[in-house]
Length: 123
Ligand code: HEC
Image (cartoon, rainbow, N blue to C red; front, side, top):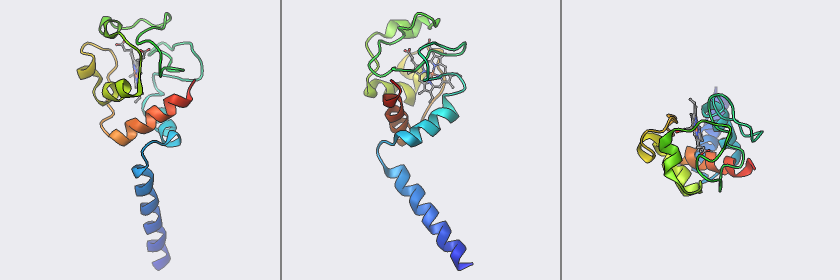
């Protein structure tokens, strides 16, 4: 029994230290698969039917892929996707870009940091 508690304690400590790390691309990859992968992919520059490709999205012009039919709202946003912009967008897409078709909210700042760290690797 004691061994079980010890193992549990180790598990909890590891989970806590994982969450405390500022940016973790591996955690971001898992989050991407769970929350974004339904619509987006990062393996090819070709967009899917649901959403634009996010391959190389960091530093890319907002709403700039020609094979995806973006909302007028996102097309009007302008600029390039910086990590800071992405953070604001993911925290509340509908607030950052009213009228966007992107609905997925990532309320947790650590989750957003991990996702952005992962997207930086998806070149
Ligand atoms: C239900 C489908 C769906 C999910 C899930 C989703 N998105 Fe999107 N996403 C979209 C759509 C649709 C757009 C295009 C929005 C528009 O045109 O207004 C978009 C646009 C984007 C853009 C802008 C891309 C560009 O070319 O300018 C980024 C960045 C983005 N999503 C990131 C994410 C991330 C990160 C996640 C996971 C946390 C996610 N999305 C989850 C549907 C989705």
